[in-house]
Length: 227
Image (spheres, rainbow, N blue to C red):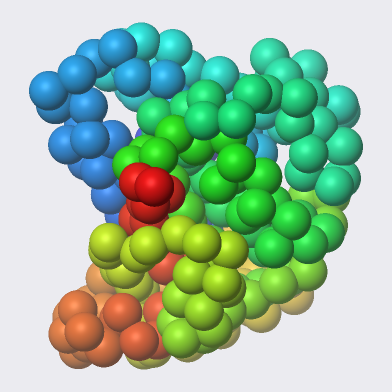
């Protein structure tokens, strides 16, 4: 998926609702975190194409993209073990945007994130609940809401906010759409138009507490404790 698709998806995109809500929530959170200080250092940990960089970079003092060696856009490279050579207590904010499901060991990735984050710093972590298999280059993990909380807290983070996007009905329609599109790829745009419109409609059935329990996507804000 191209970075510009993530930043500006159209209603004909098979991930329209997911991408739009993820973008809006992520940018809003970073805007709030940087409202009183524009000199913060943000590490995009598993940065990919950095689709939001053009929007986020003016909000921070430094934006550092970290990813595997195969990504030439990253300024700092890591191996599959998620280990960086960045110093301890380095970043004010870590952005982990749809990364955790792809790493070899979530615990190792989170341990490294905790190490490089300053005490009191925040990680913005987004990952999947109900979703299709999408290796980039690998795809290993999915979470229940309780399981994701447990995974994050087990490595020493304190969760301050937990937010689900696309509840159970919307998630079911999304998966049904993906199954159809795999069989009829030539009809993807019109199928997406219909299904994404249905997702917008049926997601209204679920309250936010219900989405926080069962969702396609979870957004977690967590802090490194101040010792």
